[in-house]
Amino acid sequence: MNRAASTSKGISIKTILLGGLVVAVFFGGTLFALDALWPSNPMSEKRPALTELPPLPPISRISSITAPVAVANTAIRDVLDSTAPRNLSGNKDNPLSELLGKAEIGYSIARGPMSVSGANQALTISTPLNGSLRVTGNLAGNAGNAAGAITGILGNALGRNVGNIVGRTLDQRADIRGAVTVTSRPVLLPNWRIEPNLTGNVSIGETSVNIAGVKLNLGNEMKPLLDKTVSDQIANLSNQLRNDPRLEQIARREWAKMCRSIPLGQASKDAPNLWLELKPVRASAATPRIDPNWVILTVGVQAETRIVPSETKPNCPFPQRLEIVQQLDQGKVSIAVPIDMPFTELNRIMELQLKGKTFGEKDSPAEVTVLKSNVAASGDRLLVSLRVKAKEKKSWFGFGAEATVHVWGKPVLDREKQIMRLTDISLDVESEAAFGLLGAAAKAAIPYVQSALEENAVVDLKPFAATARGAIESAIKDFQSQTDGVQAEAQVTGLRLEQIEFDSKTLRVIAEADGLVRALVTKIAVQ
Image 1 (cartoon, rainbow, N blue to C red):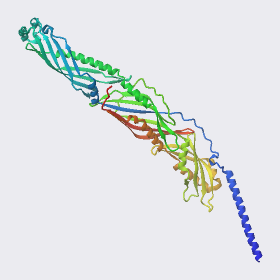
Image 2 (image 1 turned 90 degrees about the horizontal axis):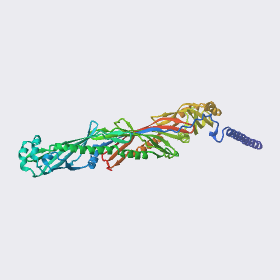
Image 3 (image 1 turned 90 degrees about the vertical axis):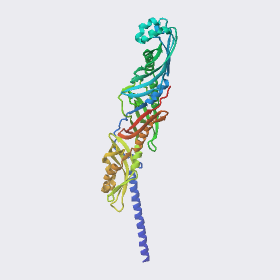
Image 4 (image 1 turned 45 degrees about the horizontal axis):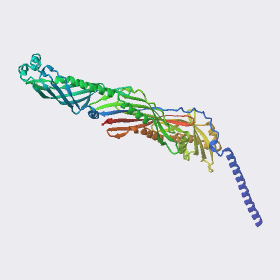
């Protein structure tokens, strides 16, 4: 009996061991079969055929910066006051040679401080005149004979008294009071010059000398002289301004500074260093607007702008002609840049959104975990290939398997949230067979894959938008300065992402920014 029990016990142990061995062999064979069915490189499984896209053409966008430059009338006044002649002196031809004989008429005039004001699109410059007139010499011997001819000028008293002073030495002085007013209506010319359109006027008060008891008003005699002197000065100044190259020289200097590539750094980790290329192509300006206290000159530049993966040396010929445009009330910055993102970066961002996430409701028959993802372009859609692990939840064993599924979707730009998402998502027909080993329970997880992609297959473009904004702020930084007498302000007020396009290797995002710019000049350097 003991032997039977012992034998029965031994058989039972052997049977169990044998059964375990069979199960192990079967399980090992199953694993071997699964390994044969599922390659070691899961993402290398055959994917749907892709439609190759032609490379995106090189692209740049036209950007513009239009800035009103307000020059204070006081700055113009100070320049004119420091450069215009202050004194005028000389001799006037003797208008009464028969009476005054060898007498000389000398004058010395000094101008006072200048004032500048604006009204009716004209700039008015005025200065007072103060000086003296001196008559020296002798009365002519035939003064008596001339008296009758000039009594209308001198009065009858001179005829009666002139005999008493013939040959007498004269030394008479008189004050000169007056003012000079110059009006300018400046116009910009296409050849980078200014036509000042200057006109002038001289006014002289009464200037009297006393000869032989008679008062002579020589102010009217001085006015033609001063008119000619001022006219000559205006002609010289007009010619100087008309041929002054400083506006073109300043424009050429700033043009050369703008023609360059600006380093931007990386949009995100592991992304390539980027550069903003600025290539000015057009210059414009408006005829100055004259306000009571300011002369406002609007200048503008249009440039081709793009973001590139390496520094460039753009060629920017200086425009020989300046385009004349209408005045603007406010400065404006409008800059557009294309940002090219390689699909390697897109893949990295997408995988961060999906890898390791499990999708499926609590009461769903199965759940799906994303192990790896890859994005490729084909036609007007993107193909998202996902290596997933599906696990059914209805049975006690909870069988699961890995598979690669392919999902199609159209990329759409969400401008408000600054993200790219996939719409019209559909599972590739052949991908449904990937869940065949798990049966109907695993296939039920397919809708969760699709809905999960709709919610999570997004690319956050905010880092790229921030890079674009930084690029634009760098581009207009040169307009921001605080120097002696010059205050320039520039700022970006908003940035938006306008559109996306792609080829087989690159996703392109177009960013546009708006801003404000202005400059105030309260002091002009005198060369």
